[in-house]
Length: 320
Length: 287
Image (cartoon, rainbow over all chains, first blue to last red; front, top):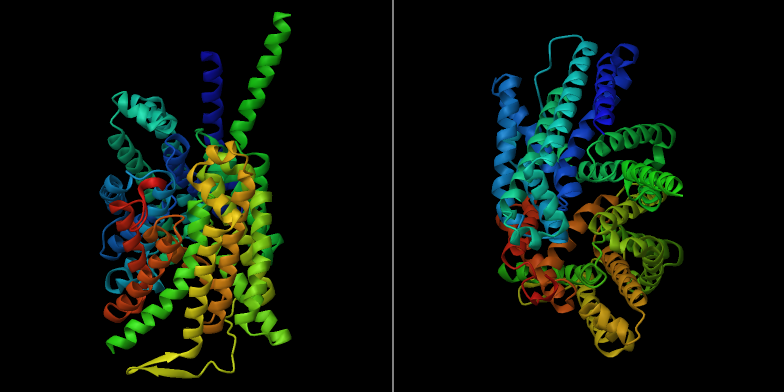
């Protein structure tokens, strides 16, 4: 068992090192595509801890992405350096998640999902209408880094990769901790968890704050990377939808699922965009239906089932 | 001024009431949050547009056709897509109905483009005076028609065998199954009825407002608010919720500015969710 684990860790380190050196062999276009994949993997991990592990679906989670992006844009337009603005964005997103989470996380199932959509739409309206601060519906620009575009894109590639690795590792340790068992017990049965002495409100709010933390940092990086953001783009419901699809195909409630899902969906979307420009919405819709029908447990879940079945078969043979 | 605003609010609210009921029935009874609802409404508008362009049929008549077509579409979507995944939980039904929305949106964009369309009725300009306020004739007709359809839906639910069956299934699924009801069929009829109501709303919408695929998202936002205000699966609750949203939007637009319209609805919805999760008029049952 421990041997297996060592091999896994070794493989993961090799994968990370490969990704660090990958941009040298790729065109600028593909560097940008893979940076987007890393970004979606981070947001999908934020969805994963809430939905995959805790069983609460935050359909409006794009609001933290938007908050991160807008705090960065506003802070940098006031002259603050990026490294000061990012923690600020994360803190503000966490504050939002706690203030909104304490009342809203009392709701279950459908109602929670809908309430988060409502809050996301309300925040979007505020950002669109507070023109003096946010630049309004037309969007706002950020200072551009004074270097060649190829070099800055490599910086953002590495930054997103780093964020993805940190997010995944943190989530791995959080899920394995006492706290992680708490949130998983909420998914299994919230009443039972409560009566076993788990403070469910505390667990739910902290889990959402963790989700908000990583999502907002992804938003902050995105804003600086694009150097232009518009409200209906960073608060887009499609971000959440994409994220849910990514989580589903990768396998909800597995630590590598969101990364695998992000690669599959984003690469596929690239192909769909270039091959069926006029039909890319329908193609995405059909892909979603196919995924739900044929791999409802996601890639990791399906592989896991396969491995389990093989083990069972081998054990049977041995016992005979 | 005050009377005119009140009349505008009621006329808008009547359409909202009809729009909300289908969504509320689908959510409250079949247990499906139908994110493709906006697409179904607008599809109804385009069906009426085609009937008007080719056969010069009034939307108030062609709404029967769009209702029937969408009833069939709804039944197919439920049987083919949603029914196998009802047990999988909220993630699946949300994402599947969103996929349907994307496909329908793409078809609409391809066939009719993203431009705003209108149906120009011969009597669209006429209106009559009520006190010192003007009432546009088409909006008045829409309000009356919406009221009639809502009442017919209520009669269907209360007096027919199928309607009573749907109610029984909503109250107690196992109990209904035990006395020999085809539970899945009831769910399917209820879901298809919801999409049919969406299509009827779309036809009525087309007779007074412009429509385009841009409306898909905002309509879903509105029906969420209406359904939650009224309590899920509650016909009269949804009707009241629709009227209330009509008032809130009209009042909000004139006091705060129309750019806040959507935010007002959302803030109302979230506060109602927190304060009375089973709706303003709903019973505690569905929460």
